[in-house]
Amino acid sequence: MNEKNQNYNNQGYDMNYSNGNSNGYNNYDEHNDDMNYGNNGDNNYNEPYYNDQNYYNNFNNQNFDGNYENQNYNYNNKKNNNTTIFIIIGIVVAIIGYYVATNYIFIDKFDISNYYTVNVDGISGEAKAEILPKEATGDESKKSSNLKLKNFLDKANIKFELSKSEGIQNGDVIQVNAIYDTRLAKFNKIKVINDKFEIKVSDLPNPVKNISEIKNLSQIKKLYENYFISELGRRTDYYSTLYEILGMYSGKDSNGQVILRIYSKIKSRNMYYDGKAVEYDYLELSNLMQNSNNEITSATRTTITSDSNLNGEMNSQEMDSRLRLEGFSKIN
Image (cartoon, rainbow, N blue to C red):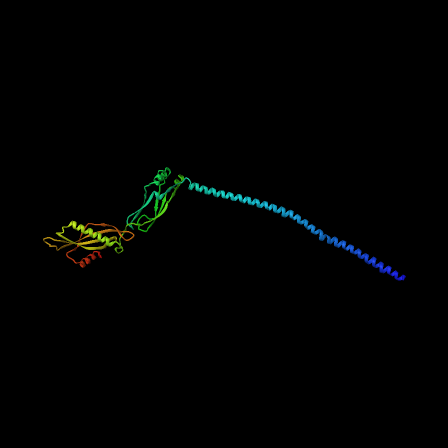
């Protein structure tokens, strides 16, 4: 008993308790103190705190100070940009104001077309154009009394350039350009308008070159036949002279323009010829002009003339053949 107890006390109890438990406890304490508290505690507790401190510092240094400075910078930039925009707008407004003031305020307008006109004279194809002064009336007459305008008219030395001035025909477009002293106009604050314009030529007398195109030929024929008859009656004594209208014939002159002749047969009755002597007279129409509707509007009438190429008694066929040799054909 004593030996067992001794072993128990010395080994089973003391050794296990003292060495095992004591050492195990001490080892536990040292391990926990060194590892869990010291190391793990620093890692798990101190490091987050440290990070929170860095976050605070970052907030102070970046989020707060940086954003504040950026906001001030952006504010200043916006302010500078707005100032620049206002300056640009002011310059634009000033330029527009200057333009309006110098071009529209206290400016006398001088309309070329109210003082000058384009005159086209002659027949189509041979007409000439020139600029003529127009007599001012009404408001334009009052403007002419304006000293500035009068001074401009007297000293501006206004001249004109025409794109075409000769050989003008219907349908031509003439461009007109007025040349004047621009410095004098600016000095007198005169704005010249309509200094460049164009006109289309129309209604010029147009020579008749193709009789088949004339629409009022029958009226012309009747008109001049009646005139011819009245002239023959006035110039002759019916009891001694007989006359007969033979009709109208057309031909052309040296310029290719149509001429018309109305022929008549004249018989003289006297003791020698007994109404058998025959002569042929004609009334000629030249310089025939037509309008845009192909209607004859004017003609030059010559005096009654005797055709020396025709004599003796002839029927209508013989007369037509003879006149064709002269370049005339009968108009039905």
